Length: 343
Image 1 (spheres, one colour):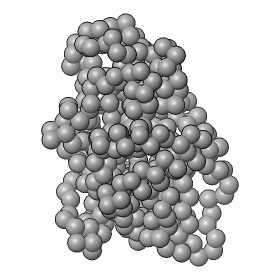
Image 2: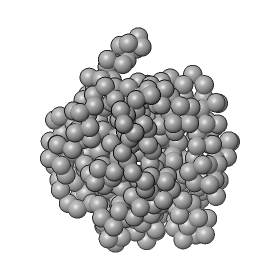
Image 3: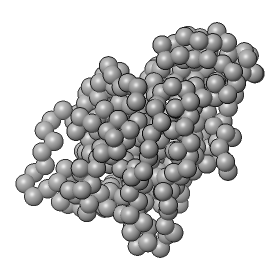
């Protein structure tokens, strides 16, 4: 597989450490196990944010597990954290998941649950109405090789447009942090961005328009945007802890779906704590309609996404057998009277 992770990812980890205060020892008190969980301050990670903010993870993990959290801007940085043993489990998108599995030759990670579908859009300046008008334009994504980066590059390829990893070609693709993208768009430094919520809605509020709702590119408008991944070594040593983490994930999605307004408030407050800027309730409500919170990892869409990454030169053809371990998820779903899911 081609090299996807580097200085940007390392900086992401450093930023995460500064943001979350996780620079202290990861050793748990005597008799306790530490679980280090990563996620993003995005609406597409609402399950994780609600699980943390409402104490659902802590409740399901129990008194003998100490939960420590870290946040990331995009999947490749989170994958570096997994590889460097900085986190044990993380919510990430499908393409970084595949990259991690491929880079480790199937040894490092397992997908243990889904989390969310949808919530991604390609937002551009109002004057852009056709793909051909993107020639010579500058378009942002969260990070080279992340799920939105692959989606944009494949969409451009389908429309006969080129974009190199170095920023050349017909369209200049600029991987950068989502918070930077919003300011860059408002200052006319970029012409658009393929980003997850809430950043898509923020770009619209800054004068942009949705050129592509990514749901429209997938069968039944469903594709995995976030799944829950765990280090295989941690899973082997602490299956009981991982099962309880999954129970927290299922409880979080149940809360999100049963109490959307309260969940939106919790997500706004959670993102506000992490970024210093709570979300506009109206933007959250509008973006929420584009999201589906599901424990089903929608595995077929991950496989398709991997094919897209191969097509744009960001991934060598990869065998994905063994990526999913949904056994604990199905045990939790059965105990809650819910239907099982398949990989």
